[in-house]
Amino acid sequence: MDPTEAQAALDSMTAAQREFAASGPKYPLWRHVAFAAVMGAIVLSQGFGPPLQILLFVFAMAAVAWIVADDRRRYGVFVSGYRKGRTLGVTLVMVVLLLAAMGAEIHARINDLSLAVKLGIAGGAFVVALAASLLWTRIYDRELQNGAA
Amino acid sequence: MDGIDMLLHAPARLQIAALLAKVTEMEFAKLRELLKVSDSVLSKHLAALSDAGYVALRKAAEGGRQRTWASLTRAGTRALDRHVAALRAIVAHLPAAAK
Image 1 (cartoon, rainbow over the protein chains, first blue to last red):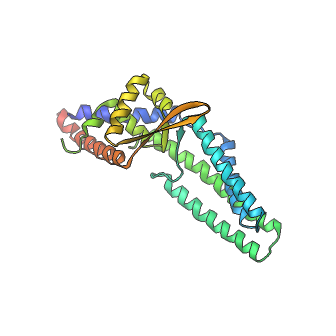
Image 2: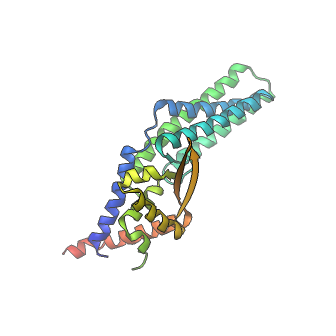
Image 3: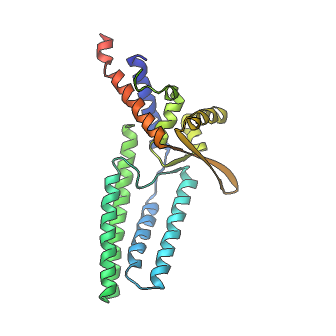
């Protein structure tokens, strides 16, 4: 293989990935909000004892399954949030912050803090998840546009 | 040639691997749309990649239809990384070759 052929092969890869970036998933704002609401619900579930804790958690898991199924049906692809690449840093930071929020909810439950405090923590988790989801998508789109293998 | 994978040498197969490297799973119809090839051509390429253990194929019933989902395996990811590194090494000689 000569250098020109090799460059053509690399260019064809980049072209395919850019085509995917152009025609691939375009997650609307409601999709980011739905994801953030689910994360907020999971965090909030830790602020209550059963049966509300279990109900919220089961609802959140069902919503996750629905979002994944809708992504697959709508876009013909599934991209895990835990994929390797430049997006992984965003995912890990989000997970750490959400785990901290869950810890705060457990603290609020044990110390019998008010509903307003619990909703405030869950609201913070919602904002973190929403920002992470928007940033993750932006980085992913840029990665596709750059055509890195 | 060191690192060049003859299975990925075919442009369509290289593009399939490059696309699957960016997702967890991609549906057959989406791959066909992106590559602009026929069902039979895509099936042949996917079968070759699957036989080599580079791609995993999964059939799932969705909305009353049978759909095929493809994903890149670890072996496929390693092969693609090696192949791309080899291509880049060849391209690094491009200025010299042009002289």
